[in-house]
Amino acid sequence: MEFYHLRSFVVVAETKNLTQAAKRLCSTPPAISAHIKTLEQELDTALFVRSTKGMTLTEKGQLLLIKAQKTLDSAVDMVNLAADNQDELIGHFSLGLNQSIQALKGAEFIDNISENCPGISLQLQQSSTGKIMTEIQTGQMDGGYIYGEIPDGFTAIEIKQENITTIAPKNFASEKIITQLDLAQSMWITMEQYCPFDKVLKQKLGTSIQSKVQSAHDQSRLELVKNGLGLSFIELAVAEKEQLTGDIQIIPQLSFQMPLSFVVLTKRLNDPIVKALIQEINILWEAPL
Picture 1 (cartoon, helix red, strand yellow):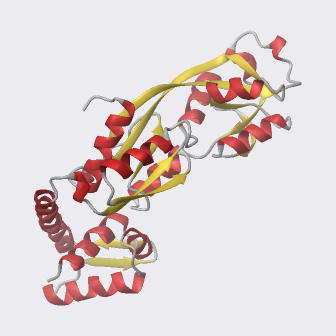
Picture 2 (cartoon, one colour; picture 1 turned 90 degrees about the horizontal axis):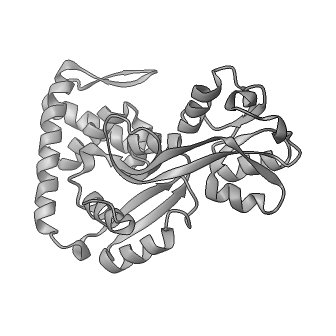
């Protein structure tokens, strides 16, 4: 029995999908499928029920999953002992960004990694909170920045409380807005299926929000607002800068704060690469260790 067979088994059990497991392991679906078949042959038992909906563990597969995870965790512990110094670590970390690189101190972070962990390479991916969480869960990202509540299975370092505000087209009749509820009948450019901004919007104005377009990309929403297609939420710092151009206006009646956090999967906290990145994040943002 090989470690990489166990690793493939655990990832397929987590993702319930050969294609997603292959992406996480930088392999191919046929190769991962072969690993599973080899393991099933060695153990002389079926580990998964295969269907059009994906791969579901059998009863014996569930028992093996517990033991396989313990075996892999023990291997990680051995790696930790062999890599006490961060400058000896070699690996890759895919980091999801839900703000601009400048706002998230990207250049400073890269410099710190290059100096303190020269063997770790970074891949920065611009995305949104919902997509970052999904891709961390499926193994396409190793960690990232998200807004809002922390889901089960994630460990978070809160970076700051971000000021969020409402922006409107320059010709919007803002003088008619007295309270938040006066915005309920306006057209909105919403974000995505899972977005804490949309959750706040419904909490403040009710569930019957008028919206004809969604965009998880901040710059796209900003351009749509500039073109008069509706109102939207954006970081206050961005809004204040854009308001100077005269293309948008800030509607202060609907402003709020939202926690911004760096997150990783809790089950990966013992991974040496993850531990090194968490330490660098704490240093970068002066968060409590």
